[in-house]
Length: 207
Image 1 (cartoon, rainbow, N blue to C red):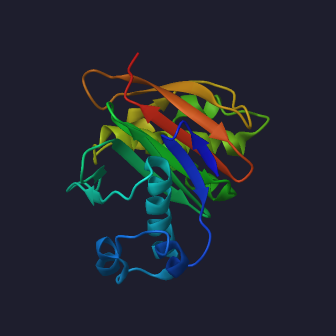
Image 2: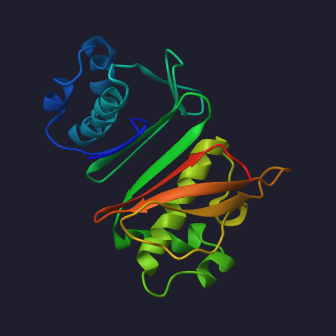
C-alpha cells in the first residue's frame, strides 16, 4: 500500500466484497447500492471506501454530482477516486480541487492510442519505454478530465501533454495544458510508476 501524508493512497484490491464490507461500519450506506453490482464492481467500489477510511481515520459518505463527480457529504475534503485492475486510489485536499488516476500496466492502451495521442505527443514518446509513456499520457488526461469536470473535453485535440522522459519508482512531474477554455490553463502533473501500475494526480495549481 502506498500512503502519502495521509492525503493520497493506493491500495491493492484484495479479498471478497463481503470481507471488504466487514471493514466498514455504516452498512446502511452501501447495501442498497451494492445490490445492482457484480462481484468485481463491488470489490472496486468498496475498496475505494475502505481506503478513504484509512486516510481520514473515519468512515465518510461519498455522493456524486449530476455529472458523476464524487464529493463528500460532509464537505470536509475535496476528493478524487480511481481504480484499475487490482488497485484503488484516493486523493484528498481540504482547500483545493484534486484529481487522481491509476492505470494497470498493460499493452491494451496501444489499441486506442490514436484516439487520445496527438502528433506532438506521439513524436515525443520515449524510445526506451513507450508503453509507460503512453500510459502516463492516458492517465494524465484522465486526471485532467476529472479535474476540469467538462464532459465535452476531447482528449486528443484539447488536452496536451508537454514533452518529458518517464522515470521509474519515484515521484516526478511533467506539465500539460488545455485548449478547451479561453484561459488555456497549464497544470503540473505529479506521477509515479510502480511495478504494476502508473499513477497521476493533480492539485488545482495553474502556472
